Amino acid sequence: MGLRKRLALGLLGLALSTAAAAAAVDGLYEAIVPGDGTEAGRAAAATEALRQVIVRVTGRGAAATEPALASVYAAAPRFAQTYRAVASGLVAVGFDAAALDAALLSAGQRVWPRERPLTLVLLVSERPGAQASLTGAADPDLRREVEKAAQLRGLPLGWANGLDSATQQARMADALAGRLEPLRALARDVGADGVLVGRTGASGIAWSFVGPAGSGTLAGSATEAVDTLADRYGAQFATEDRSAGRLTIVIRAVRDLSGYAAATQALGSLDTVSDVALEEAAGETLRFQVSFTGDPEALRQAAAQAPRLAPDEDAPADGALHFVLRP
Image (cartoon, rainbow, N blue to C red):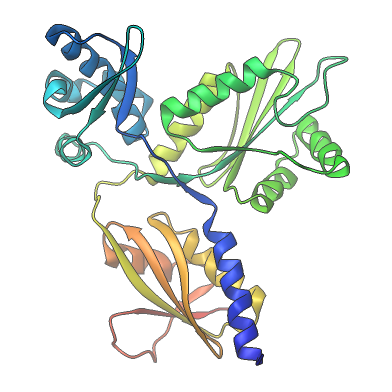
């Protein structure tokens, strides 16, 4: 097998692993609330369910009581498409995604696409005699609260299952000491974009996070921590333009696998990009297909500001975006 062929296969494998970081969230436009099959019961259920859905879709916890959305909430039954009885006294209400998005954008809201950052959650306890674990095994109630809050906000989560003993001990020490960079490296290793750490002590839970939406700390419940992180993500990734598209991006001067990783990371880090797929590797030139939301010109400008990408002034006018990888 020639060098070019082996390089292309190696790059393709890395592309597949890199693309796994963003997670597509299903069920954004459906919520389960108390309700029954009567006309009045359906109307009330639609309104309550719509509050959950709008919070999830806009990425803003405050949207549930936003005065500017009063007319949207008043029209909840009009947006509702399906009602499913899921348990005694509970109903799942599904909404028309396109119509709801249009109404939200008309009301001046931003909409968070279903491709969302995957967050690795690590839970450790500082209590004497607590079970040593990063996965919440020491406090299953806390883990369930984290998962429930994340489901309500449409925030995809991952857990550090299957770590070898030495790695788990080292990362637990980092978590207890508040060292976030090694934990972020662990998140990358398992295909996540960021990390949320909860440290349980005698006085409560201390939370810290780092990732695409920056870093921060807070003290409070698991629900408060997830809500804070979801609000941060929503503020960064929600957009006023839901138009989606695909664009070809060509990058020259990619001489090895580390250069490929740098090029892929530069494209994947752009806010509106949801997927980066390698289409062709030819010599030192890579051709990518990039899925994104919003304006192609805004994507071009954002890519041109990436530290490792420089506009390729010698490129042909073929409809693709062309860059040169900086050393």
